[in-house]
Image (cartoon, rainbow, N blue to C red; front, side, top):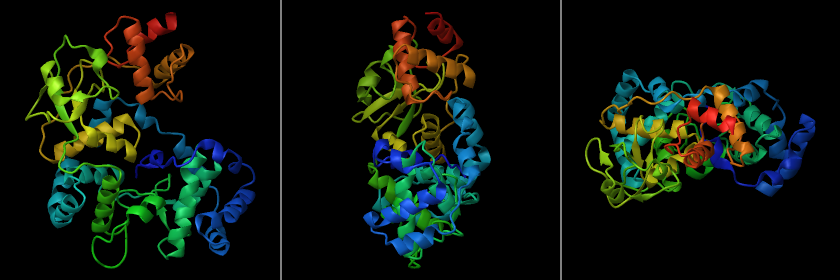
Length: 392
């Protein structure tokens, strides 16, 4: 369903290594994959059979270029994704598959709320898994020269699954970015982390919730999830705080944040753990302390807004209260954000792609520019900041 999930975790080689192996005639491109296949322990005959019916899919490219949902601020985005119905169904599924989650928590140390949140956001608990032909999607995106290094390795992984009888290039479907199954896993992840959770001798991520959830738990554990540790706490921050200390790049023990006046909205902080103070919409909006397990979320997806929403939703499924949205200052539209990103780039900041999305690099640049201008450095861009940056 949410095809932007997971793609960022697969940067296994530098772009330059694939720069000469993308674009051009599509048939020639497929022939190049066949020639390269033996390097990945796939024989040429298997590669040829796998690719014989594969075609370019323009709909995949359109989907790749239209991810405007990430332009929405956290409060808006999270409210769109989290409903009472979704919370109720999540908790119901938690009870329905309690034995599976008990096994996951014991074996991999991943909290059930975390996996329930991913399951909900990825495919609406398995109901909407995507109808894109997976082989077409992977080859189309590898041929496209935007991010070939992300997708080319997935083609050879899919070929290996095909050789095992676990992938049908004509019929296997999923999200536009090549993810498959209830928690949307890419072929390499299936090979590394696929688990037969229901004991039927097969790994069926599309039809078996037990297989999908166990595989997702194993993948999170392999990415560094720390058993028994929290991932996020909602907090209250004093209004005279040094806002320049906020953001993912600053980490202090939770006990140190507490000494500076940061307190939990409910419960207690994990005092011995390093944590970052996150203000997704600035000093007048929600505030969270994030722990090392929160960083693992970025190995699943690199969108700050998605990651924070998924992490928060996991706590809601476990019984936490609705966050205090506060009264954030007016933010920027997508076009205004692009203008700000261009202006920041002209000033020498690394904001990444000018895409109208307040991503991690843009947040860091905004905070630095706010500090330079003598403004509260809470990393939340406002029309006032845009006017000052464009004026100078």
